[in-house]
Length: 134
Image 1 (cartoon, rainbow, N blue to C red):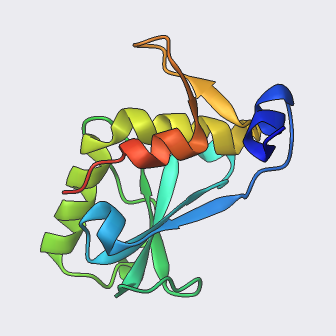
Image 2: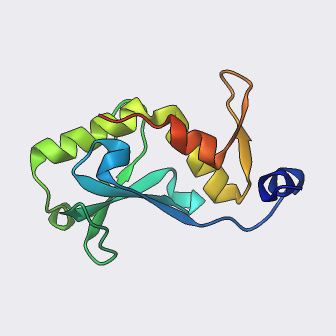
């Protein structure tokens, strides 16, 4: 039995609690962090202020919103230019459905999720593969 098949058979197992998405995966100049931030705050991503690198001590948070992602950090925490920030917001809107699936999986610590629009079941890898670049 393949490891992936074993995971699909298990209803609940510990997953990696974060994923860093680099420029070659998003088309953005800054690294995006997706992971468990806490359900009480709603779906969010973190964005590194340093181009091309993740910095745990130098980032800010945006809400994942279908129409208009909002800054959730202090404005002073954002050190990127306005164009890059707008590109990140555009990327969030472009990938909203898939980001919601990923957030669901991270928050519930599950290996797969159902796309309510299509009824299809996706693994976390499937969803990462579906993310579009800006």
